[in-house]
Image 1 (cartoon, rainbow, N blue to C red):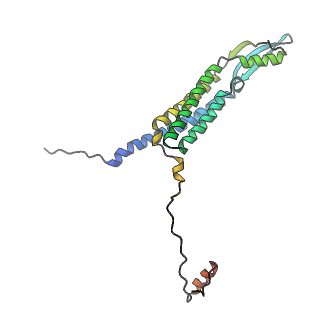
Image 2: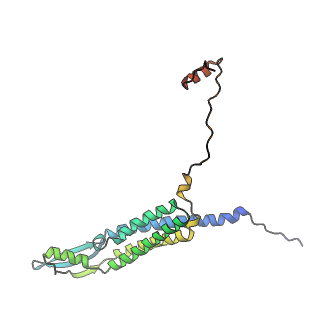
Image 3: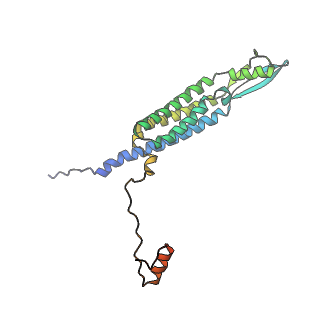
Length: 213
């Protein structure tokens, strides 16, 4: 009986990690960019609402996410910058930036969840509307937008974890623009044939003396 031995090709073995690196790169970019966009959008929406007693009546009040806390929006911007910076650094720097990206995502989640039940922003608005620092808001209710911001933070966190896990296989932006330090040979002007009129004209265009040695 004849036995056939399968020989693995080096290119096929290297193609697997390369494809995995491209998939993780695309997923990290998608999660990071989408997470930052979702978190920023959510902080501009209404997070809480209630009423304040003003001049014997009820005055409706609302608070956006940016009124409650500015941490999620700030961390989303920093996380987006870290996502871009991942490709500008290598080795240890890439690990540090990837860790920063993951921390931005985790911080966005925590800040958004803490703001989901915060009523201090509406209390401040109630005090301003009533002209009384002790005034508080009544019939306080919250929307789902803080949890949307937290979901955006989860996506940023996922992008950071992917960068920590697979970032060493991703390309570096700076590598494309590095110039070779080896000296390049200087171009020498072609020899001029005085018997050819076209060579004489070319020499004059270059500022050379075609009659010289």
